[in-house]
Length: 131
Image (tube, rainbow, N blue to C red; front, side, top):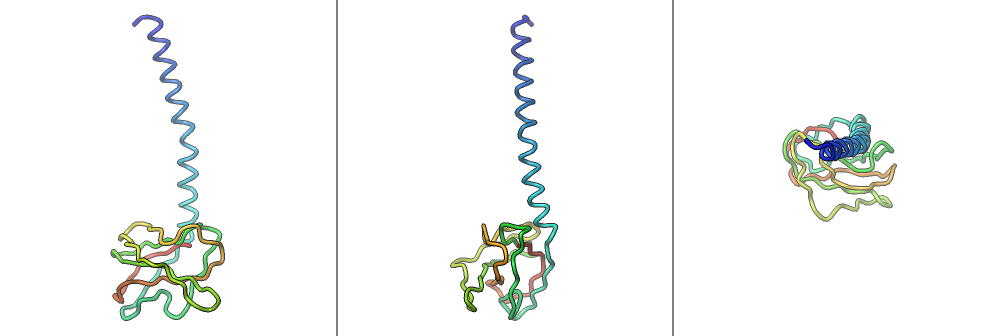
């Protein structure tokens, strides 16, 4: 290989490696954010016969998560209702929360917001939530 081509190949490889290394902290920061949020996850049990979790009460968001997330053990349609001035204000649409994975149901929620999950079905549901 001529000298110019070798130098160009080495320079290209170095630039590619530097670019990959500069992306690593971004990926790690994203994973750490998710890990710290989900590290505070709570398990839940919603009995059959009710659409609400928690039934007759509310949860409160923390500063660990920017979003309200749910990880059901079976696919479930869910929406979030916020307590505002003593009444519930619910999202217009349900979100399909897929089983065994984290699903964002409400984004960019302020710390200390009071909320409940409303399920489209009154079937029993178990899983985890983080907010």
